[in-house]
Amino acid sequence: MTSTSFTTQTFQRYEDAAQEDRSAPRVRLKIPAVMRPSGSPGFSVIVRDLSLSGVACEALTGMGPGTRIWLTLPGLSALQAKIVWNDGTIVGCEFSTLLNPAVLENILARFPRQP
Image (cartoon, rainbow, N blue to C red; front, side, top):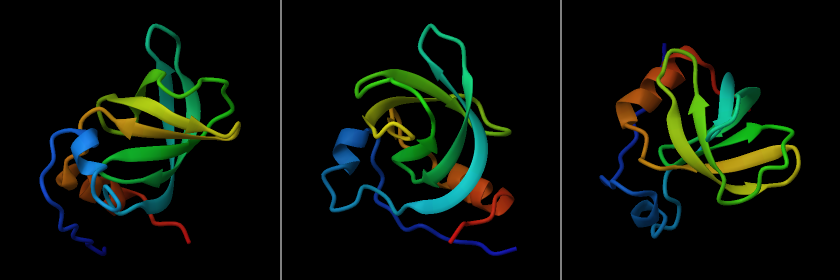
């Protein structure tokens, strides 16, 4: 088992973290998850990119920027996020509250990185 430490400043809001050159290092992986727009049923997605500040998922959806969603990763409570971009097959979202580094470490210990 490999451990990857992230050295990060502590930010409580995405807007604060986004002021940095890169709000958080991205990790490429492949995780089955469920995305649920507020007030609607959820649907299956594949997380392809994860960081402390957001996520990119394979998702065939017409939801546009600004749409509030809930993302449920295996073994975790739903995370609130907002869609930032959608290219028709991949949806990029920013978390409402930055992911705790310990939670990210736990995810990385359970799901292998992708090239």
